[in-house]
Image (tube, rainbow, N blue to C red; front, side, top):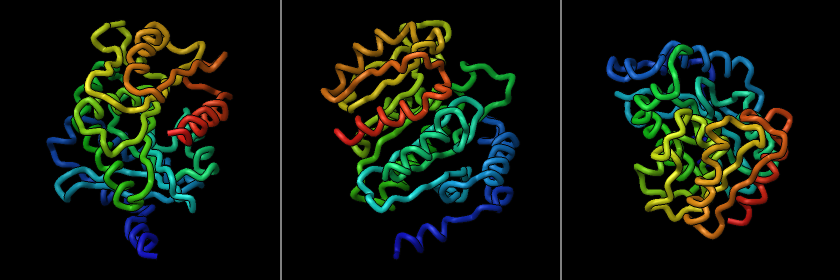
Length: 265
């Protein structure tokens, strides 16, 4: 009952224009207006879960999260979308919210900082400080509201890169696993320095890619596999046959792979 009351206080579906106020410093780092539009569109079409607003303190940007609860409460999945998208995007994250919540997982999908359409992948590096803050807030929320659950972080495309950056800059002790889908998409110049590194990580990692994924994802797959298998005995790499970077029509296959892997953590 206390948990439900807490969530009700967080619930606010139509006040995004009020709570999404930006300081001048933060506003310069990402596209505030685009985030407002994404929030508006997301809330107008939302049919699964509750919208919540997360913030660290009043001086920092509040951002939208979509929460689905579970009676089982054994696992909590934090989900991070790809470039320029939102927490209920139809590209991987939206379908994963549905499949995983139906399988008894608590899920929280959060809005990550976005840039305008004319920005390239490399320019997203300037919002990584903000993305770290948001990932940290998402993990903190799940831990405070469900202390006994195992937290797994899951990202698609740019979202997986942001999670890799967060792991590299934070203690991962509060996280039980990392699901990376389409990791390496941002490495379009095929730089070895940008390939996933297992240094200082002892965390189970599931690396999922499509057979017809982006060139940068496919090129770095063997290198990632060697690094990922060195992180933990439960780490694995899975290639989804005939799937491209957005895994259209293969979402259920991904979900089943994730469910099997997570339940063995």
